[in-house]
Image (cartoon, rainbow over all chains, first blue to last red; front, side):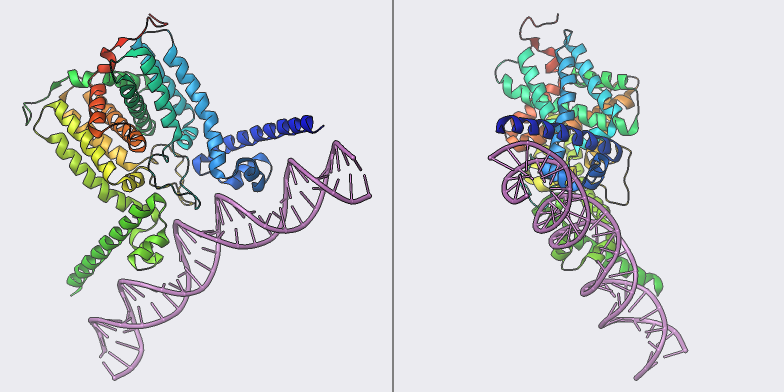
Length: 213
Length: 213
DNA sequence: AGACTGCGGTTACCGCAAGTAACATGCACG
DNA sequence: CGTGCATGTTACTTGCGGTAACCGCAGTCT
C-alpha cells in the first residue's frame, strides 16, 4: 500500500533527520558556530548533499538545531519560572538555570546566539529578523509569564513584553560577559542581577555631592 | 629629510585610511554587515589588496569601523549619562539617546552588534571574545559611571560591573526587539525600561492567588 | 642624464565553504 | 523483467577572504 509505505519512509526519514541533527550537534559542540557543512556531514558518516536534501540549506539545519536546544532550554526555564515559590526566588532560580546552561555548554550557547550571517540568497534589509531567535523566544516567554502572574495595571501587556525582552537581554549580556571573564561565582552574579531588578539602583544614594542636584 | 617625509607620508596614509573607512561606511550602511571586501574596495575606487595593506584583514577593517561608530555613540551616551540632572532623568536620557541612535541607522547598528564570524585563521574557542565589542564597551563604561556616582557599599566595583553589563544588555535586547516590531513609541519604551530598573517588578502585586505562596 | 629604491596600485591566483547537477545503487511494485 | 523512487556519491560552480607577484611613477644618489 502506498500510505503505509509512505509512513514507513517518513519514519525512517525522521530518524535519519534526528541522527543528522545529533551529529551536527556534536560538531557544533566541538567547533562552535563556524562548523562547516562538510564537517557535519563527515561526522554523520555521509556527504553534503544529504544534509541539503534534509534541511534545505545551512540556515535550515541551523534553525532545526537551534530549535532543539532552544526548546530544551525554554523547558528548563519555564520550570524554574513556574515553580511554587516567592517571586524573588523564582527570578533567582531562573537566572541560575540559564547561567548554568550556558556555563555547561558554551559552544552551544555561542551557536544559539550567533546563528549565522546571511548567505548570498536572502539579505533581509529589515532589522529585527537577524537576531538570535533564542533571545526573542525567551523574551516572549518571559513576557507571557509576567503578564499572567504580575499585576501591572493598564497597558500590562505592553509593559510585560518590554520587560520580558529587557530582562532576557540583561541576563544574556551579563551572562556573556561573565562567561568570558569569570569575575565572580554564579551565585553572586545571580544575586547581583536580582538586586538590580529589585530596584537597588534606584534606592542607592549618590556617592559625592555630584555635579547636578 | 627623512623625518618630515615620513610624517608627510604618515599624514597621507591617515587621510587615505579615513577615506577608506568612509567608503566602507557607505557600503555597510547600504549592504549591512555582510558587505564584502570587494564591494568596499570598489566603493572606495580601488582594489582589495590596498584594504588589506591598511587594515590587515577583514577583522581589522571591521574593528576600525566599529571603533569609529562605537566611539561616537559612547560620546553621546557619556554626555547623557553625565548631564546635571536627577538620576532617573539621566537614565531615561541615556536610554533615549541609545534608542534614537539605533533607530536612525539600523544597518550600522546591526553591523556593530554582529561583527563577523571567525575566519580560517583565528578561531577563538574561548567564549566571550566573540561578542559585539560595542556591548562590552558600553557595559564597562556604564559600570564605571555607576561606580563613580552611586554608593553601593562594599563590593561596589563588582556590583557596578554586573549592573553595567546587565543594563546595557537590557537596553540592547529591548531596543532590538522594539526596532523590529515597533510596538510602541520610543518614549514609552524608555519609560517602561526605566520603570523596570526602578524596581516596579518587585513592587507589583501578584495577579491571582497563584500556585505558590 | 640614467640606474636605484620605495610606495600606491593592479592582476591573477590559492584555499575553502556553500550549494548544485548528474550520475550510481538498492529495493518495492506492476 | 523494467520502472519508479529514495538514498547515496563524485565532481562541479560560484563567491569570498586572503596573498603573491608584478607594474609604474615619484624622488634620490652618483
